[in-house]
Length: 145
Length: 145
DNA sequence: ATTAAATAAGAATAAATAGTCTTAAATATG
DNA sequence: CATATTTAAGACTATTTATTCTTATTTAAT
Image 1 (cartoon, rainbow over the protein chains, first blue to last red):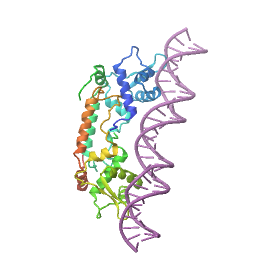
Image 2 (image 1 turned 30 degrees about the horizontal axis):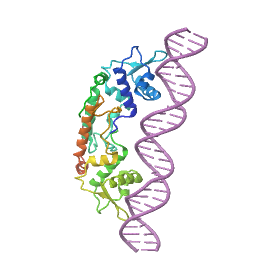
Image 3 (image 1 turned 120 degrees about the vertical axis):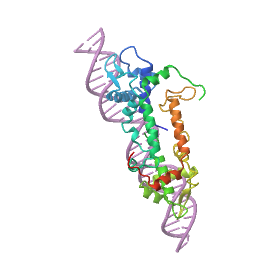
């Protein structure tokens, strides 16, 4: 189940890397993040530009430049990042792609899907980057599922 | 949120059409279904081949041939169709695409996503084509959401 | 047998997504 | 000012998904 594009996955993971591995200086270089995460510098740069233009990151050019969270990690919610990278219509989809599925003419799974999407959106809107980064740093490993 | 491919969406909708609009004869022609649903005959044929090879449909060639449900609409679950068209690994994905996300090294949203996927899978496995087709025939329309 | 009506199979094309590359602009430092 | 470092912008390419097209096979009816 591919709920998110590669762009979103990389974007979120890169942000979590930034929060989990705070830099000494004000800005962290995209090159370093890409290297540590073993993904394309250019692709990450492109993703970060989107996050910058959406007010999630600040960027600064030149030596010692890079990117930095525009707000505290506590106040950046997963929802913000998902909407920035997937578009604001992310939660508007009809599960089965029925042509004019909506309030007036709901598809047969409309109600169910509406609730499922609302739950997901709710979770995203209540999950901050700091909360997720904490889990990474705590190295929460489960040996049995 | 694009949870399903176009293939799955069309496939499910076409099956629902078949259940909601039973034909006189044993088989219903793909051409008729495609025409009624206003989608490509060739594409639908391709999708139906997959459903046929997965034991969800029976097909018959020649005049008066076509496709027919291989089992009762009550016993074909949404899950069967989704797994047939999306693959059996549909519920195995990591939401954030973390490299070795799993029991031993869960990603920061692993537990949440595991539950969300299980809920969805559960719903799919408890929803039959007949249940959904009934809603279509009842023309359940909601004027307020 | 011949023809018409279907699906089967898969090649070919189009569109969307993912990823790479090149050039420009900004900034710090010697 | 010259140079090095870094992001910005967007063109370009590759891969995946979606869609169309062509040919083959099966079957019924005349």
